[in-house]
Length: 319
Ligand SMILES: [Zn+2]
Image (tube, rainbow, N blue to C red; front, side, top):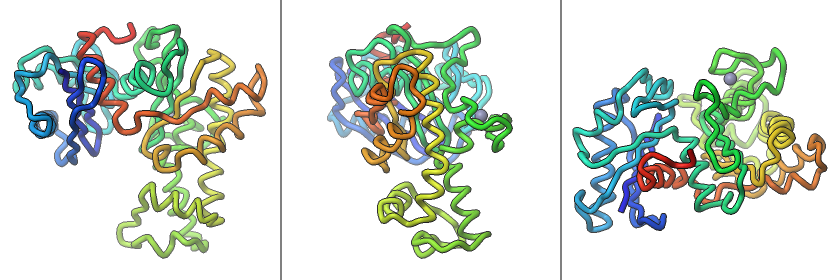
């Protein structure tokens, strides 16, 4: 049996997984403090709850995989802005809690790897992943191998430029897909329209002005109810997925382009349909190729499942 743990900026999800990739139990906890020691202690606490749920002790675990929102090499998280970590020796620190074999990987790479082995991209050789949440994560599997590039930073699909000299992105550049299609970007546009321009919307009733919080399901409800402002803002940002997806489809001719992450989980099939529409006109080999765009089959579990697969393959997953 294997433990797969997804360590994010706001939550931790731990799974106990069989050698065949079946999820036996899961536990989710919020991240309270983001210093490495506290986060790893919490990740282990979360893992122990998952083990208890499955009626197991830690001796039952052959190996453990950890996923972090960071470029990774030699068991070290190089830079994780969501957690404020730089060159953090995650494996060494986690070894205080789990003494068996431990492996570390990038969350988006592992999420796409899980979709490739067990989910929506099974049976294909070249696949791409776009994960829409706080940011837009990207990963590429080319002919059965995860693409790392010369500097380990290949596959940053969220930073494809969709508007030259466009909106400022969190990475410092301008006009990146992430600056338009991430949940953060959509909410910023909506808040501007609601609270500064005072435009009417059904969302105005469900949001508390003090916190100005809108969750993905509220957003989807307003979208489904055809609230004009929500439609305008969401479609305005998300339609830029079209040229971005078409560009990478034109370049790599993938068998699947998997869309995942919190925003995609909340919007579901209607969003996949729209994204196909927005992509179709730009595909070189013909509009019917937009059918390769599919929704993640594993949802929230994709990243920790990928971490468990990394542990099963002793750190050599899709290399
Ligand atoms: Zn960017």
